[in-house]
Image (cartoon, rainbow, N blue to C red; front, top):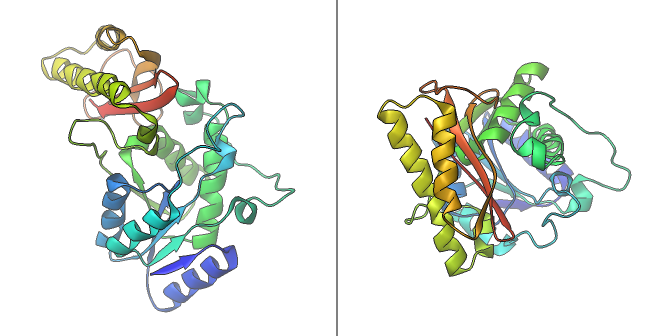
Length: 280
């Protein structure tokens, strides 16, 4: 496996792969790799393409009061994960390589990104999409593999790909959870045992809402009310949003459309912000 941290080196490696007749699958990550990322690397390998994993904490998607400086970073462990899962390249550039002084060009999607996290984290999708497109221009992947845990990011990326006619296939892998049900996230490392115990109420809430839908409940208001009530029983949890939304547009729905929507939740566990969702 190659470990690269320079854009020119990554471009040259990608060009060599293509010249050798290989297709390329990119797995973009913020590093601090875990079993969820490993599942995406395996999914990328199953396409038969050469697998490039990017590990980059993108400063553009963090607001001024958010956790960029303390966001978990584990470069040695990232390399071990990539080697274990047989990735071909790990691309881990420093911030100054990706966004040198004077960088001033950004990409903004203005429909899908305005909902949910776009309301409470206005820098998120502009920064995410700018970095995502720059990575794609460096690697020139045929396929980009993303996790369904990041449902709104996927929807924003799909819209950008469609609008800009980008020759990229978006392949998604299912959300991966720990044995106790908590969705895997680098920010889980912030949680104390007691905070984690309270956060488990969110997965229980998602399962309860799913059961209600399977029992015939279609009213989004009723489902959201039930979810809000269940989470409110935990004193350390504070809801940022709970919404039944269309999976493609992220627009709020009045009724469940089976197979086309999800329940999206963002919440605080004391000072730790987490998100979760479940298809309905």
